[in-house]
Image (cartoon, rainbow, N blue to C red; front, side, top):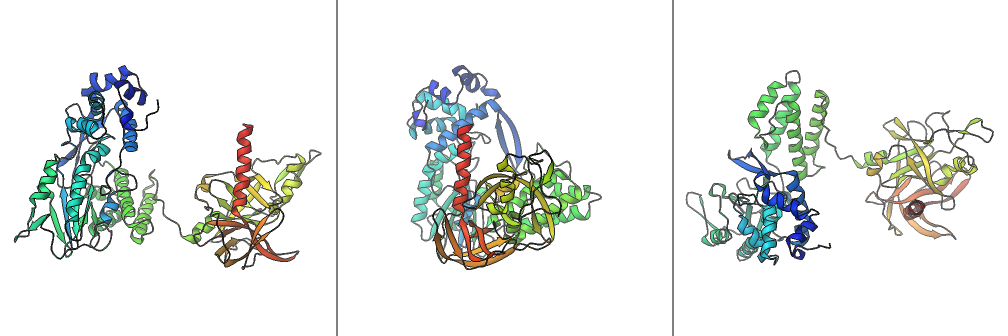
Length: 574
């Protein structure tokens, strides 16, 4: 059954088939067992009240997830709505209200609970033009048996956005008739901001006692759409006051309240100085932090650390992963994990450009003088085969890349003679970071002698996910970076040279780019990067023991083509 839009559903049977269940099973869930479909629990809110969450059973949850996906395919959200929408969030919502003279915040009271079964059914009929019986069935899948949209069901966010789209249109038009005014909505949080010299009276009036009276027009739009304004959460903030939108400070830039950062620092410091008696910071934590889930109270420091970690990740989401405050908070948190020896994973911090280069660039050589790969010769005797020193790099999703001539002897003297190495991963390579070498093993996967390319498979492939990314475009006069280990000796750091692409040279079988920087022996196989630190080629030749030839690189597209050629042929064989 090919259902691509919710309007394609014409009957109860269509719904059951789309959800991949039998008619009787669907009927049993939404009719016979409907009073048992949800588990209820409460979570505290900042204002001291609580929010009721209704968690669907696993059986109903599976149906709702599938229906949610179809709704997402069938609905185009309003451009001023930012909640529960791909590539939009509380940060994008707040970003529209930065550095404004006035910010007005409203809250729709009991947002989900105020959307009744009748409104949901009518939405399916009016918006998607569905038959009444089909709309009733879908509404039963989405709504609580007591007749409201449950907060906790995966279908509720998108349904609330569909139902609120009319209000979004009306409030967008209202904002447009006000000078220099902008509107957005994030779920039940409505925000207007203005750079007008005085706040628009079409939206609200500021009374002599500095209280705010919303305009009749604004109130009517909201109430006529079936919602109620939470009068306790109406706030009008001038540029001289602390302006906040969806929990983010917006006075001059996207930011987090300083108290939020200060509290994080304080509680982590308390855990650090009281490591021998964590009950002290734990009691402080319980008192100061309002926890979101009363079903999982903080019983020990690990519970607290998980919440702290989430709050630090919130800082990164708002300020960015390269923000110095976030990095310092994350480092302090990771240090706490070491002190307390928990099983909680640390916060993964961004690495510097130089660290990124070092992590993904390698010396292709044996670390020890007498550790050349062992193999059995034609007579059954144990022997060792040496290979030259070169450079190599991790290419994301492909492997360890170098020049063929670096590993030539391993191919011609062992593999092409049908001989076997004693280990599956026989070729040694290692990183050089701050005078420390980390040895690893690989095996030859694919190679092309004429193009001088070799692709190796590392024994441990996890780090490939963070390897270099390719760029297939290069032009004359482009700036480049050459990475590698020329004339390498143990303890020598990765060499980074800057240069430019001078010209493109073609031979009968190959394409090469000549560069201005010198490529010395041992640098063969190293990556050539553009200014975005994307790989554009593989260093191949220059100053060698045999003389001087132009310093060139192989376009990275040729390595990618080699990989695709062999992997596609392997699929055919399978």
